[in-house]
Length: 81
Image (cartoon, rainbow, N blue to C red; front, side):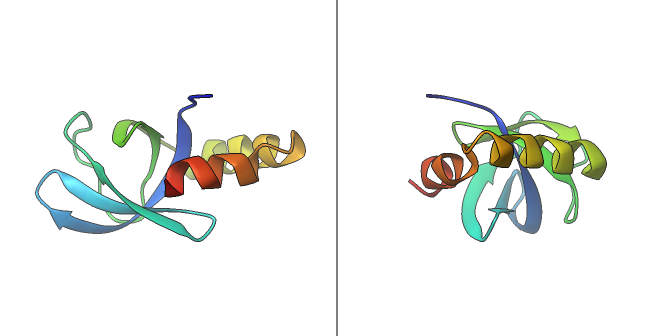
């Protein structure tokens, strides 16, 4: 299953790339499709690319919904792979 999931930008590694965190899983992603992304922003991530920025409240609601559906662990595994 491929889903776009909210992740928190923890570090800008190079221009156009960042380390994101989802529940303790860290992964380097591309920011090529998102303007003005910064540390502390939430972004929607799909197959290694940030698609857009998302506000923190909406990111938390989305992550809570995934957790309620029992999908959060599966998404963490997918992000970590």
